[in-house]
Image (cartoon, rainbow, N blue to C red; front, side, top):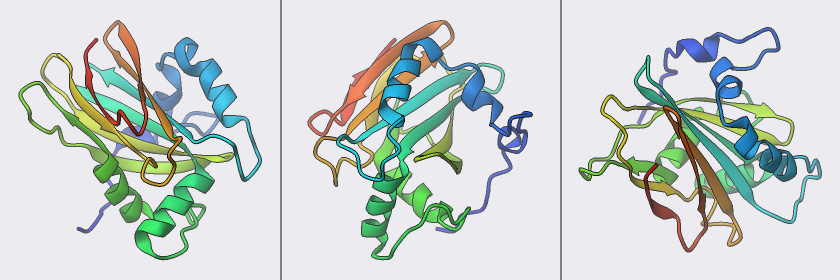
Amino acid sequence: MTFSKPSFKKVNRKDAQGSIPWRTSRFPVRLCGLLIVLLFTNSRSAHDFHASVTQMQYDPKEQVFEISIRIFTDDFEKVLSAESNTKVNLSDSHKNDALIEKYIRAHFAYINPQKQAKPIKYVGHEIEADANWLYLEMPYAEPFRGGQLKQNVLMEYFDDQVNMVNIQYQHQKKTFVFRKSQSVQDISL
């Protein structure tokens, strides 16, 4: 599979602070802001817990879920290195995009109530302090009526991995917590 960088206008449109507008503007900040601060303020290279935070924000104009996943960089590098049998350094810009895309496609998926897998488009990633932001899009033209979500990122390497997923669709918000024993869940709002 060859990867060509998607022409995603929002990734190329950075605001004055250099951040991607949809990643920071409309997410349920109150719901997960405190958790993000608590989970990702640890600047040590080793940490006592393994967690990721996923935001799924529906954009009705574009009819797409904009998805961002925040993962500790050191954990993600370990997993990608093991998967590829080579040392991975994520600070090497977009050199590892194909590897990241392959990994995310295997560990993050959504199946609608009609048992159809929805396509997920890898948009890119960026490093922020000790974490990596991964950006995805999932086209969704029909009304959201739930389905099954798989979010087992890093769970094959860390038994204590916890993946929190915040879903916002129109005016509804809900949080789901994924663990190794429950990496696929029925979701509804």
